[in-house]
Amino acid sequence: MTNAAITGWGKCLPPAVLSNRDLATLMDTSDDWIVSRTGIRERRISHVTLGDLAYVASARALAAAGLQGSEIDLIVFGTCSHEDQVPNMASGVQLRIGAATAAAMDINTACTSFLYGLSCATALIRTGVVRNALVIGAELISPFMDWTDRDVAVLFGDGAAAVVLTATTREEGLLAEQLGCYADARETLRVHGMGGRYANRGILYGSVRWQFEGQEIFKRAVHGMGAASESALGKLGLKAEDVNLAVPHQANLRIIEAVAKRTRVPLDRVYINIQRYGNMSAATVPVALCEALEEGRVKPGALLLMPGFGGGLSYCAHVVRWGERTSPRGETKVDLPPNERSALQIVRDVMEAKKVLTNQEPS
Ligand code: UT7
Image 1 (cartoon, rainbow, N blue to C red):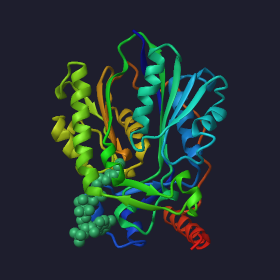
Image 2 (image 1 turned 30 degrees about the horizontal axis):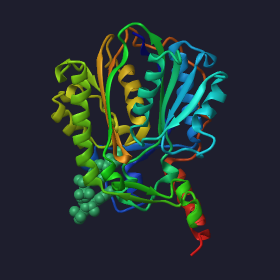
Image 3 (image 1 turned 135 degrees about the horizontal axis):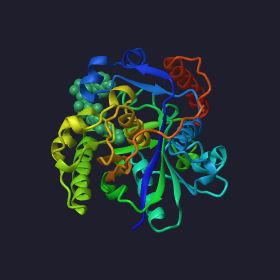
Image 4 (image 1 turned 60 degrees about the horizontal axis):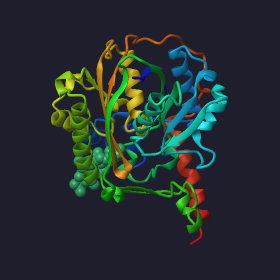
């Protein structure tokens, strides 16, 4: 049987750091509240485009795999913060990495987009349609944030990461997953103004309002990720004690702790980096995977459990068998252009631009 081993990985975090204290200068919140309710201490704010973040992450993943862009047959770009609906984000990465003969598609299941993308790319490798695939999870949330709404503005950040999948006959890569969606709860997370739906309603792209029921999302997240984890492990006849490391979606430390308790994976076998980045939506799991590798938390042959949830409300859990190699084959000089503004200044610039847009809206 053909599997899809993860042979390369790379992340790209924009350098500007927005602390909880920075946020407290913009809205009625505090470091204490944010840390105690979410575990988040800071997040990154991007000075470049979503395509730039994804390109750098992809170049690093290719270098780690020891592959050229021209050897990639498929690019799957998981995101909900597209630059445009058309053309898609994946084709932009395709052009920049020189994957001239690749297929390129975007997937949007909000925060689970990377994991859903991993499923699609793995399936296409298993069936022999493609041999090497690049799967990206990247988000640029900051321009779509309502920076006056403390219910959501403290939770999210920007970032990107990518993995390379390669066909193998070994029992490696994604072995089993459970995908699902609580469509009945889809209105608990809606970002008004983030898509073409608004084009004919006199609302300008960039003028957003977040409809967000935090507590309901919290409950569904714990339930969905817990049940999906049990189900995905069960398909392989495995249990929590077989999991060497869980790399969950990072939305709230309390959610991660509740899922760990429910799935009975002890917290010392759960990778957590939410304190540094907040919720980067589709980028959280691949960035966490890259950092777990950098920190030596992923051992050769490790069994990884990756539970996720997001708008929709989509949920899933993926069981991945790691290969023998845990260090990159190579590195690249590709990097972001330098940044001169502080994160707070970038946010203030976004707020100013939105004010101009809002003033242009028809009354
Ligand atoms: O990937 C999918 C994205 N969605 C999520 O991750 C959401 C999951 N949900 C959550 O993470 C949590 O529900 C939140 C972090 C959003 C909220 O935590 P909570 O413990 O459910 O707080 P709450 O909504 O019950 O609010 C408690 C209090 C309220 O004040 P009162 O009514 O008790 O006086 C809020 O107004 O905290 C207040 N509050 C804040 N205070 C300071 C809400 N946001 C803030 C804030 N700073 N940023």
